[in-house]
Length: 81
Image 1 (tube, rainbow, N blue to C red):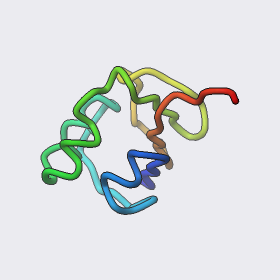
Image 2: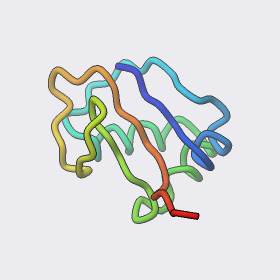
Image 3: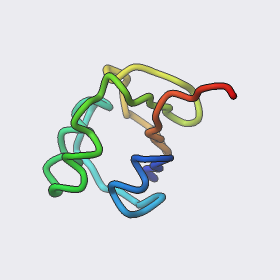
């Protein structure tokens, strides 16, 4: 699946997107796999309360299933201005 990172998450991880092969069944399990990749990922996913997730371009929760999913995007909450 394609994993996309936006804003400060992209800056911390160092790439805007990557193809990920995973055995994770849920977004939460994917996050744990990504955190285990190293310090950059661990820092980016350290505070999941400040991260939003979209699965196939629809906002969802960490408990969302990854079955059949093509894209997961992680991003901080947006603010108006």
